[in-house]
Image 1: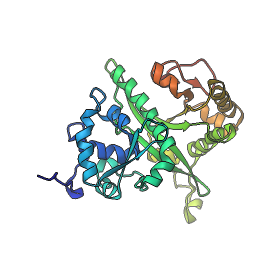
Image 2 (image 1 turned 180 degrees about the vertical axis):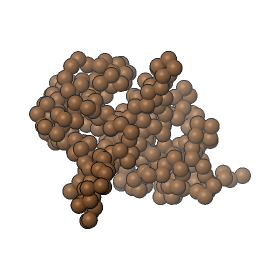
Image 3 (image 1 turned 45 degrees about the horizontal axis):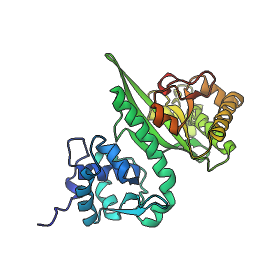
Length: 305
């Protein structure tokens, strides 16, 4: 009997209790591309890779997913949604609001693979640490490529927005962070300028239009970010793909920007800012003393910045 074809009109949002096929599709819709091992760590961290074999084979036979082979990787496969798979998942409630430009071809996958896989690798470091600590940070608590208006027709695009619940005794702390993943592919100065973009978003307050400008009774609308966040998220830079000396230098340049630029310095007094090396997150845990506060001080957990 042929495998049953999934229908977009009847598919609910994915949840841990739903079929693994649904979760694989949702994960690829969320993260755009992932290796088999990354999907396993994301969805079934205690299982072996054979747990994914049957559902992924079925999804490929249904032309919902495809893969490219990563170069110099012992034939590691990186999976992405086909156009049919992207169409199937686009209306799932948990995925609404995602930018409408999935990777749906081998060519696009090859171009986007290194950075996209590194962003997902960063997510997995936070997720593994959350499981170890008993905190809450699952597959759907990480939204890649979130864009916000900062005025003058410009936007700031975070590599990801992290949602995290730290559980301490009976207390639940809701934490959020903008994640910037740096693979040392741009100059250190260009990396540090990202802090200016975030400072512009932090301070951006649209002006009333037309006659409202002259009305004294019209209340100030407040910063734009309040539309999406009750508290402005932390800003975390995850550095990798260079020597430790180079990455430490890039952290120092971020600290200098936080100290020297007036708007960034004002933001840094209210918004936690930090930088860490990805390999340290994986070795010591994301809540280890691996985060360098950009406002000064000793390394500490990102939750204590």
